[in-house]
Length: 147
Length: 168
Image 1: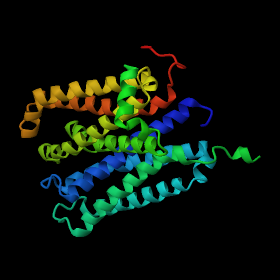
Image 2: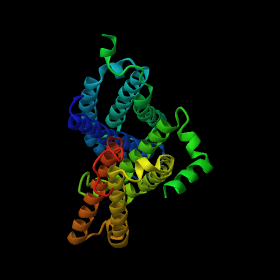
Image 3: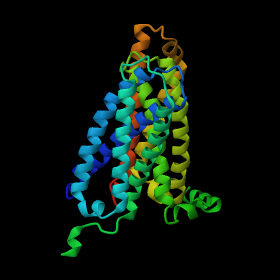
Image 4: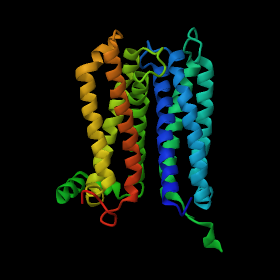
C-alpha cells in the first residue's frame, strides 16, 4: 500500500468519493427533516440509503487500507479517534432514521427526528474536518522511527 | 497572472489566513463540505433522473438543488483562496486544469439541461426522447462531479514543474 502509488492513491480517491456520497445523502435527509422540500416524502427519500450503505462499505475498506499503509500516523493521533467516533455515531443515526422512515409513508416527522438531523449534520462536519486535519496534526509518520 | 493572484491574496488578507496554523486545513474542510452538499443535492437529482428511486418526485427533489448551489459557492470561494495563495502550484498543475475542465463540462451540461429538458422533466409528463436526454445529461453531470473529486485528490500528487504535464 505504502510503496504502490496507484494503490494508495486509489484508496484515497475512493475514500473521498464514498465519503462525499455518505455525507451528501445524510445532508439531504437531514435537510428534508429540518424542513427543506416539505412535500418530498421521507419514505421515498430513504431509498438513497441503499447507495449510502454501499458507500459506507467503501469508506470502511478504503479507510482500513489507508490505516494499514500508515498505522502509526493515525493510531497515535487523537484526531483519528475523534473522526472514528463521529463516523460511527453518524452511521448509527443514519440507521435509526432509515428504520424510522423507510417503507413507512404514514410516519410523521417528530421532534426527535429533527434533533437527530441536526446532530447528524454536526457529526458529519466533525468527520470531514477531522479527516482533513489528520494530514496536518500527526506527530509520528512511521513507527520505524523508534527502532 | 501569478503576480495578480498573489497580490489579490495578500491585499485581501487571504494569504495571511491561509498561511496561519490552521488556515489551509480549515479551507480544505469547507471545500470538501461544499462538494458533499453538491453530491447530496445535484448528485441525488442526477441519480433520480437516471432512473434510480423512481417513486421520488423530480420536482420535489429539485427543491434540494439550492443546497448544492450553496455548496458550489463555498467551493468557488475556498478554491479561489487556494489558487490565489499558491498560484504557481495550481495554475500549472494538470490535476487542477483537469478539474476546471470537468467543472466547465458540468456547467455547460447544466445550461443544456435548464435550456432544453428541465421544464419537461419537472412537469413529469415527458416523452421517451426527453427521458433519454435527461438520463444522458444526468450521467454526464454525475460523472463530471465525481471526476472533479478525483482530480481534487490528484492535485497533491502533481507539484509542478516536477511532473510531466500536457499543458505546461
